[in-house]
Image 1 (cartoon, rainbow, N blue to C red):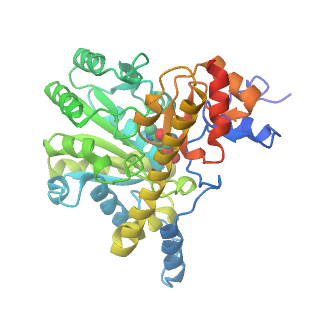
Image 2 (image 1 turned 180 degrees about the vertical axis):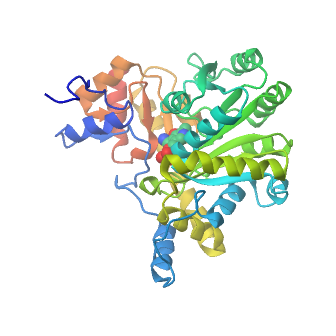
Length: 401
Ligand code: PMP
């Protein structure tokens, strides 16, 4: 017998498991709206044109090699990544108050942040919005940071429970870490307005709480990199400290290359420098140093004015296609006279619509229509196309009537 005889079969990941089930389904009309990855109107994965061009440049550079990177990764990438989220004239960057390390996409950045807080922050307890991206609940406890929920989404209005959120932040201990989705909240697609962000910022700062921004969708929500950075920049502008994880999975379509960064904005340059030195001690025993290729692509795009400009155009194209899917789905539901109020399909922001469909309605749609999504009723608008909208609308209609 094996020494692992008692190992139990683990359940599939709630999000990635949807794709496993989808792959097993032989139906030709099957549709995967589970995983948050962009698809073209033809339903195909997209490699951005600027990514192809950056890769060609990299291949042509004779001096490139495959040596190890520094523990904190590609320094040029780190600098440009911080500038992308904080803005080109960020005083925090100018004063060297930001410690930035390359990370294994957004997930890796969150995990480094968690382990750093567990080791160096007096109150390693994080408050997560309810609901939140399913991986947050695992990353933080495993990284040594205990978690608690705060109210965020109101199922009745399918919008933000602003009052509840403020109440819970006020009730949270002084100094607690507060996780905030920088834009395009996953899974709900519900973001605070600029005015509401101001109210949230005031409460968090008045209680000396530490904001930890998860920024996985910059540019993907509105189509504008600057607009989607609004919340983060408003918190950095007040001079306070925060953490920001960044992912280039969605906005550059670099999913499998695992390109991201963790930024820790500090009060002073000496603190940022000491924080940077400690981040190395977190990273070194975890994976030693990050991979070369993806960060080199991102750096090439961020540093070249021409590529950067083309990137913003392609990014806006993806964001616009998603927004147009919202309109097409909404119209298709109206045409069918589907019972219920579907305004939230138009109002929600980013890659996902939090439909409000319950678990048994989701199961019905999977069983009868071969449409796959997470059991909380979240559908990836990026996985839809004009061709597949009618099929989805038929299924949603049948599920609710
Ligand atoms: N945070 C949120 C809110 C996300 O939706 C995602 C991607 N689904 C991530 C972080 C991290 O993804 P990745 O590790 O692929 O960058």
